[in-house]
Each structure stands twice: as structure tokens, then as C-alpha cells.
Length: 79
Image (cartoon, rainbow, N blue to C red; front, side):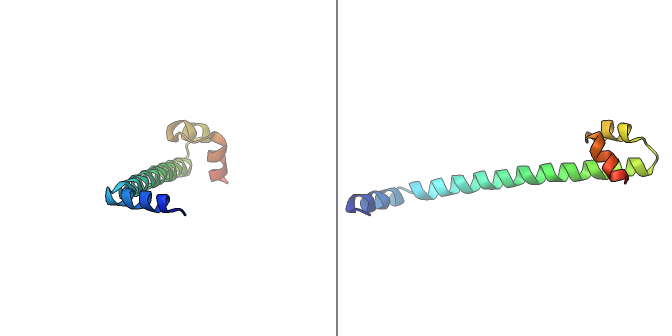
């Protein structure tokens, strides 16, 4: 690394640029993690609802329509 690069790194560090960029990246990572968690939780809840419907005697097509899951996935739950 050259003297110019070292100086630039020090200047950026002094003005807090690096810390702000790292904080933004961390916030994006957290937001992505939250979104993934919500999606997984939503799908798990839909599976639970569909399973309860099947256990209550609903046909797979109706369970799929009401839970938002694919009919093939519902039929897989029934097995």
C-alpha cells in the first residue's frame, strides 16, 4: 500500500466515512435478515394452517386456496 493510500484511509477514518459505511452495511444486513425471517415465519404459519385444515377434513385444493400454498405442497403435507 502506498503512502497516498494510507493517508487517504486515515482521512476517511478521521471524518468517520468508514464507520458510517460499515454501519449502513450492517443495517442493510439486519434488514435483509428480518425480511428473510418474516418470509420463513409466514410460510411456516401457512403450512400450519393448511395442515390444520387437512386434519379437519378440508380438501387439499381448498386448503391451498385459503393458505396461499401450492396444491402440490398441500398434497405433500397430507401424506
